[in-house]
Amino acid sequence: MTSQLYDPYDHNIHTDPFPIYRELRDRYPLYHNEDKKFWALTRFDDVLNAANDFETFSSEGGITIEGGGNQFPMMILMDPPRHDRLRSIVSRAFTSRRVAELEPRIRKLADGLLDEFISNGGGDLVDALASPIPSLVIADMLGVPGEDRAKFREWSDAAIRQDPNVPDTQRAGMVAARALYEYFGHVVEERRKRPADDLVTALIHAEVDGEKLSQQELLGFCFLLLVAGNETTTNLISNGAIAFAENPDQRRAVREDLSLLPKAVEEVLRFDGPVQGLARTLTREVEFYGQKVAVGEKILLLYGAANRDERRFDEPDKFDIRRKQRSHLAFGQGRHFCLGAALARLEGQLAFEALLTRIPDYELVSGGREYLHSGPIRGLDKLLIEF
Ligand code: HEM
Image (cartoon, rainbow, N blue to C red; front, side, top):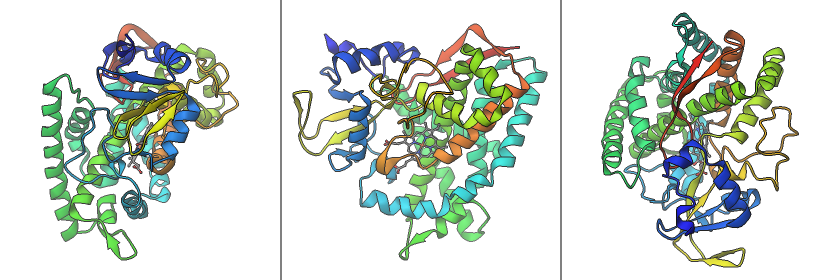
């Protein structure tokens, strides 16, 4: 019964999806889970082509298999032309200059967090480094106090941990979304009265062809940034910390030559990326491997499986920072390509630089790893390290 083979909410998948991904790519390149009523693509070329074809593979039915939209408009849940209009407006505010300017602050932040971690003699790296970096950076960009980080974390954690089989998680997700909108409602109101040098102010004023974001679009974008910015980069750092510890030769190579950091980050993204798969809804019938899939069906694009496709990468299960790199799909592809990719790469590089130079020989504590439970996101709730 292949319905049991792959379910994004299965806790065993969260611990290690890769053997199942291989089976899907080899035996069921168009996989159908009849119980949960979704399809999945896992081969690199199929996922790439589908992500590029927004006319057929629509985001408007939601990006998880159970679908559903959001209370406020968000571009990740839209197709062109609405999507492109919103993206071009926010791109006026979320610029590469704004990201590049953050470098000294992020470096200092990573160092300060590690000072404390080292003086405590080790512990949970998620709590100490991987989680605070992205949330403090996003708080800083949005111009809200760092002390509110704990609230942001709670809200964004609840948003990605919604499991249709566990009603409590869905209720928690709704409560968090309401709290977040209320919080940012106040922030936006405040910035309209007293503009500041921050992203919220820039978003209020950003315009394309005389058009600005509505209040609802502004709040939707704050929500998206908080969730997309918090829940992904944390896991880039945690998943990378594991890959480096398990491949000490690679870790040594980066430590001895920090110019390898950008390549190392790309390899972590390919090898064990934070976003494993997002859904689309079919707007027309498609056919893969002789099987037809009807209009309205949900289909998962498994970026994490595509990034281990042996049809695309040599020895895909090997973590090799020096591999002849070919582009991966960890940030998606096409119209929805991650808006925060430059920021995520910068945060990843600076976090690994600090970790590998300050605690060069850290080790993973046996049994000290807890994978988080989320449909789309792969990463950790806890990662104990010692040195
Ligand atoms: C390692 C970290 C990250 C990963 C792996 C990641 C991954 C992704 C992926 C796969 C998508 C495509 C969504 C789709 O196909 O439907 C996406 C979109 C997006 N990401 Fe990221 N992301 C990361 C970090 C960030 C950060 C730091 C931010 C912002 C602060 C961000 C903001 C966004 C936004 C706004 C979108 C929607 C773009 C659109 O719909 O046009 N992401 N991200």
